[in-house]
Image 1 (tube, helix red, strand yellow):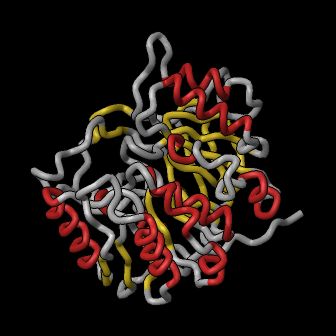
Image 2 (tube, helix red, strand yellow; image 1 turned 60 degrees about the vertical axis):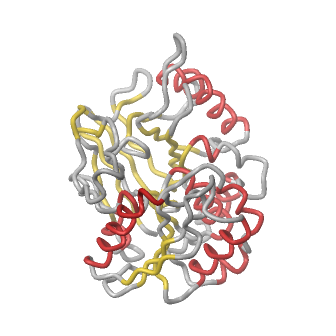
Length: 344
């Protein structure tokens, strides 16, 4: 049994143009030096960069929803733009969704759409509605950071051709807090001070599971079930007869809220075809007497498939570059933890 083919953008090459727009939050004046440094970093890598008009940091969003939707769609359908990378996420990208023409996006040549946090509010629906792969990875403001092996930088993964295999492993240390971009706009090195490692929920000692990768930021994706932009079961039927590897990460929600949102995804059928669930290191706080680990036990402890947590995903760097739609295998045994993605 085979599903419909996931479509992958062609490999990103030096000389290609990368588009920068903010479909959610823009960049405040005091952080413009960091933005300029990140754009220059891409240019030093050999890319052309075009920065859109929807970039203002004066309000909660960079521009009115109609303007943000139009600029995002224009970049994703421009054959001369080979990747679109927002500066970062934000809060209200959800207001862009009903304004996007997904039929036009599906008809265009695929372009890499890269990011995490609130960017996943538009990334995941793009994959669900069009079958085009998207790339969950650091946003533009994080792009200059050096990514430690055995993880890969998103620029390296975006250079992979359809059919390629990309293997990554678990980081040995993570970054506890973010640098001050206003004071240090040219920072390139992460402060990887805390011991890291992927863990298994429950009593299991080893995991090997395969499925199509799908996921993103829990707080933003939890708003999509029941809407025209959150048909994960439909994607699974059409594109993932192998089942899913579903991943989430908590950006700021406290533990009880995270548990409620995970239950919501289960009740909506998002995890019905999951062969495993990957959960990133949580950036949100514990609750009173109820930890983020308790939230996983409460919501996913009886799911019946492996749950791997403290994975290098999301708001606690470093993070894996994950291709939504790729056929992936996660393997955890003892101190060994790997994720292999095939762009097929």
